[in-house]
Amino acid sequence: MSDAAERLAEVRANIAGAAKRAQREPAGIELIAVSKTHEAAAIRPLIAAGQHHFGENRVQEAAAKWPALRAETPGIVLHLIGQLQSNKAEEAVALFDAIHSVDRSSLVQALAKACAKAGKQPQLFVQVNIGDEEQKGGCAVAALPALLAEARDAGLKIDGLMAIPPATQEPAPYFALLDELAERHGLALRSMGMSGDYETAVMLGATHVRVGTALFGAR
Image (tube, rainbow, N blue to C red; front, side):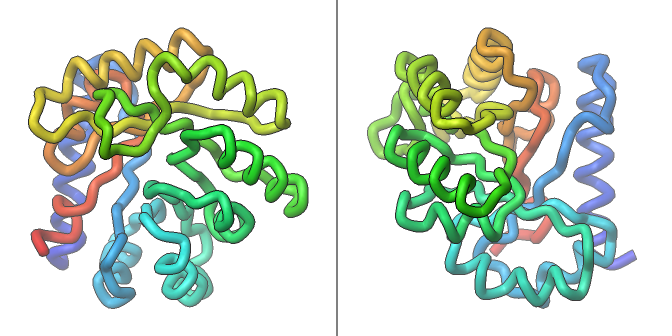
């Protein structure tokens, strides 16, 4: 096995173990390999090992490397996990299968327009600023109901919520809160958990975990 295949197998085994402890089906948890800043040469071994869901932070970076990689391997699913500028909405809708960072009214309107023009809609997650951190993207917890209503009125289907807990605090209470918010609003998907805490996230309801370092190795 290659290093990439070994790392992938280990992460998948950890996800399965955490799911079992939480009495969940491992098949209900999607592993997103965070490929931002990694070149195609680092990504190909993971694709060869069977990984098909990848996450990128920037529209431009993804547009530069993924069309060629997708031409080599049909079935790649691309997730935008970084902040999205409203003026890039059209490009993002064309390129990505899922967008995890819907977080404000102007972006809802831009995405609604882009989706109508393209005649398709990616899977959409509203990013919640779960720790109320000034420097972090995401809508405030209190603003979530209004943003979900605006998205619905604009013709967008929101599939789930996404959050990144504060880096210096125990993530479990934040994961539990996101799970509760998703449940309250009737949303099936929860995008939460990264390399350091994805097993905790799985035990607390994550349907999508975003893992970079544990798959690609330390930078």
